[in-house]
Length: 267
Image (cartoon, rainbow, N blue to C red):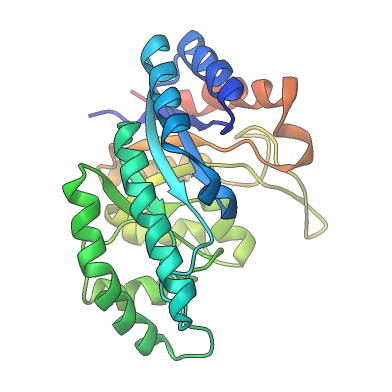
């Protein structure tokens, strides 16, 4: 199957309506939704309305993300709430008929990597079963948020126990973290379960803009080459980000310019 283009939608209902209409008009196949601490305020009624809007416009949710909750927290109350939020996310993602569920691995601050991996395997083995039973594909974001998966080494240690664990791959995040993002996709493209398209433009060593793909420093042609070499056939989700390109007319320009640029690599 060919790779499919999507973009991150805004979460309020008027924006879901506008983004669904825009996606349909301009040939995007999916919309992605992400939630941080405010996720606790999301209701089933709102999610049902989102699903109805998608149906009306003939678009779908490709990914549902829940970010920043520490599923490995040593604090029992914090961990319990994080797990409850993740269970709600599984249900809401299923309602939206999303394909992928993305979350963080959690963290145990101050503990060695081996201890973190052991706890992750214990905690997430049943959770991963629930995610897959709901018809969702789990993927884990990297190098930021409440997650000890902040390096290739951390993923490699987990893969020793959970070899089918997937990365939510964002080349710009890996680069900004100081890592070789091309090495990630070259070596482990078969471990990638979802891709973000976000551009970074650097000047004098500083991130100065996050424009449309192809206007910055991320080597998208090489990224796409390695994705093809690993037979990646999942979603490419465009992420409007930063103070200039993430809202209003500039957001729409970013989406259309990025779609045009990335489209040259799609068949």
